Length: 99
Image (cartoon, rainbow, N blue to C red):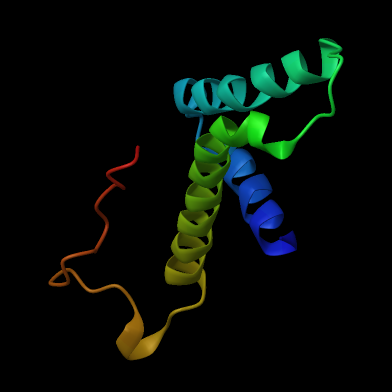
């Protein structure tokens, strides 16, 4: 669980650092508004996690963006020699399809 939270946090940081305001705002509001509504509205019955299952998608989207940020950083800062980027490779210097 800690790894998922760390990757989601990294995804939020990467989204802000990459200036992808629309992506960050969309997933951020999708994540924040339901949690805010559940915490502000008091109900008469016991709260269960099943009521906020729909926030799983934006959370996992931030996790995926964080994982992409880790891979991007490793590829551009740590890989040297035969594993470094070469122009003939299919994944060289193309933007991510997510952005």
